[in-house]
Image (cartoon, rainbow, N blue to C red; front, side, top):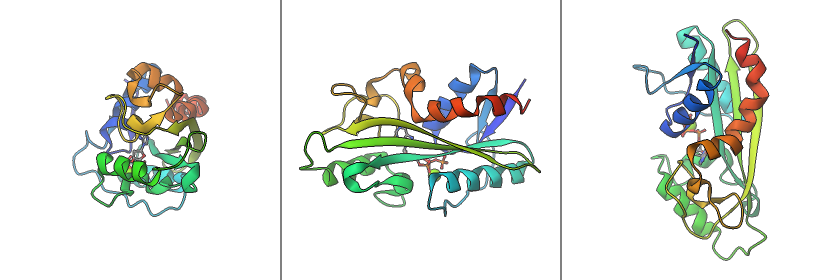
Length: 196
Ligand SMILES: O=c1nc[nH]c2c1ncn2[C@H]1C[C@H](O)[C@@H](COP(=O)(O)OP(=O)(O)OP(=O)(O)O)O1
Ligand SMILES: [Mg+2]
């Protein structure tokens, strides 16, 4: 069985990777499946730096190839916020609910047409003794005025992919077909296959 460790403690991400990699015939394990996986501090100032930090730390700890995802939301009217701080936007306790409340509050009064946003996903593949590969993927949309939909995770309920539909209203397969994570993974497919 082909197996790959995904260096994430986010259950939403882990599930999406599990599904996307299954179609490549690869089984994924996340850090939620591994006992005592180290916490890696995200000290980088870009998504790419943080993805690299996470992938390399876990590849070193287990001495196997590892893929890591650092992702987030960039809002044009907020000059790219929350950006690399997406997970800790409303504080270090990491609450999707509080993060969404903070975005909605900051976007209050911002008019239609000025609410453009994108999801960004940096993926890093670290291999013991080799150079780390890094790519970045995107998904464009805009910020809604209230929550919509119950699927997905993170900022999905306020991320509108068109005028009527939020990311959280898509099925798993629909999201995985258009997401920033898909865009990034598409760029890596050849290198990921070459791992096995
Ligand atoms: O598809 C997505 N749909 C909605 N929200 C999303 C998505 N992708 C990332 N996001 C948000 C969630 C979190 O607020 C931040 C990621 O932060 P990020 O540090 O990469 O992940 P994390 O700390 O949750 O888990 P980990 O570092 O263990 O992979 O961006
Ligand atoms: Mg994180």
